[in-house]
Length: 119
View 1 (tube, helix red, strand yellow):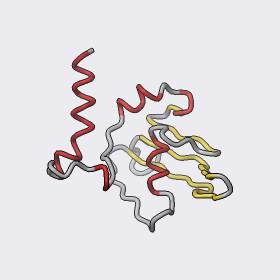
View 2: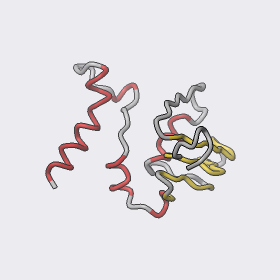
View 3: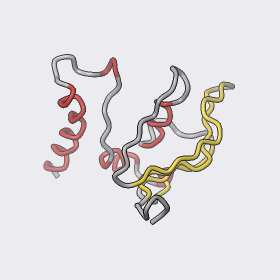
View 4: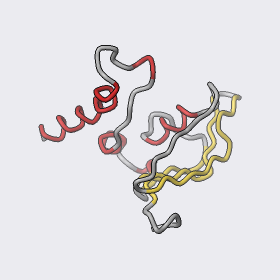
């Protein structure tokens, strides 16, 4: 347990930096996301929002720092198993125009549930 009314930390960024070539996108980013907390990341284009989200499931690796999901350092986890535990909504141009907002948001979760049932 941690601060914020003793809620469990679900995702934690510790001293995260990310550069693409000589372009530093994120510099010493720290954040704790608590159980049942709703978080919105807002910023201008190119400020690192998508990069931060992609780091949670290992699609982008930080240049330095550590990311924890459920208290586990994701750099030491099997990425396929980690991704199966994390649901996310696909961004803008990747949305399916024939589906409703609700159907687009739940699309990945439905895929995960189908894979779990197969096993």
